[in-house]
Amino acid sequence: MEIKEIYMRLNENLVYYNQRILYNVEYFELIIYSLLAFGLPFIISHPQWIIGVLVNFFLIRGSIYFEFRCIIPIIVLPSIGVFVAGVIFGTNTSYLLYFIPIIWISNLILVLSYKYFRFNKHQNIWITPVIISVLKTTVLFSFALIVVYLFNFPKVFLISMGFIQLITALLGAYLAVISSKVI
Image (cartoon, rainbow, N blue to C red; front, side, top):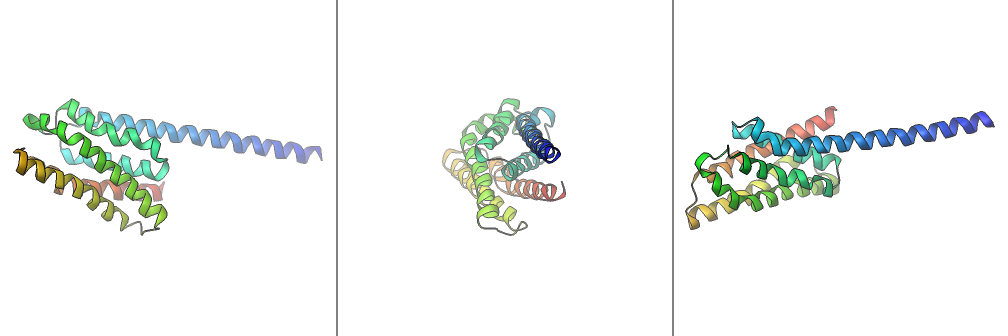
């Protein structure tokens, strides 16, 4: 009886410590994603699409493994990092300030729609990245169309907030999905 009791207590302790270790590793990963999401423009100034792919990768990986409230830094920090670094749009970087809230909203849409389609609708893992990338791009491109044609913003934003966003969102989402299946 004592050996069985000791074994059960030991097993309970092992389960508890394994959960604590896993918890700490996951939050360490979240902190790394957040820091990289902000710091990428300082580390990799060009080409823009690499930064976009990595940020979208972090967003989807975060939405796979974390609760929504934990992903907020990854949603917000990349656009601030790009603006502060001033490396992406050159002389047009000041215009990016107007896009930051829309970028946050589009990142939010990407994360929430991924969670919704993958975990509530049980959508196919290969179709979900397409749907969420189109949703994100639609929001960004619509805003870019409005500000370019109504407020005379540089037309470079149509390309950056359209086709490039679609490609980077697709690549980042697929990389995140594939890496979550492999790891």
